[in-house]
Image 1: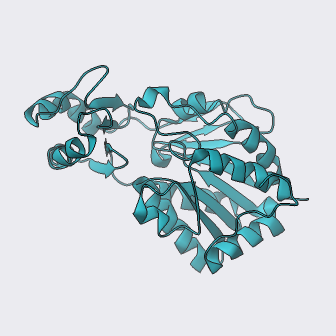
Image 2: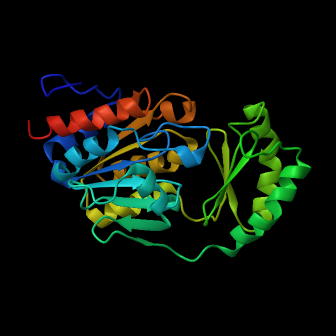
Length: 285
């Protein structure tokens, strides 16, 4: 990838090749939808230090004017993703949409505002009980090391990446956190060394399917890296049955469940960003 003289990596599946061909043939009818953490930004121990790859905004600002729509779909609050991504007031991203909290929130570059529902009351109950549940489970906590809680407002995420044994801490907390979530009408969304407690009924698949219907797109590219992206993959697979062409990209191979269903696996955010930049160069070339 570098110039239009260098071909884009070829998807390994027929459906993926058809999705890429449809996007290149009629880019004005395409949606490019992207996860944030692990796809546009590297996974870091402290989620508050996450930032988009330096090439992400230039790549997106080159691509966005050439396709029907670009959307970022993330479990983070929409406003947080906008700040950490550096997406506001960027020439070329005038119509970017960020769907936060798995689609429950929406930020539109056109207005620069976030539309969001009131928090689910179950989140407040979980917030109050969570410290005690973590203590009872023997979880090590601290500002620098151990298990960390990220309060997203509409959800709470428990990160084990900084624990002495991150995988053991993750597995030890799955049961207690599932029970806590159930008591308050929430669900637990597992990810890469993170367990997120959030309201049911909204996921990246629902968000993506609704957005594709809203735009009337004829093709969709979706890129993600974690278990939470499986719902978006399923949505693209369903859209294909209705005639919408789709290309599924997996950022990294740490989550086999995702990589095995992808049409194209790229080795992390730097490669995803370069793919988007190369895609922009190929459109209309």
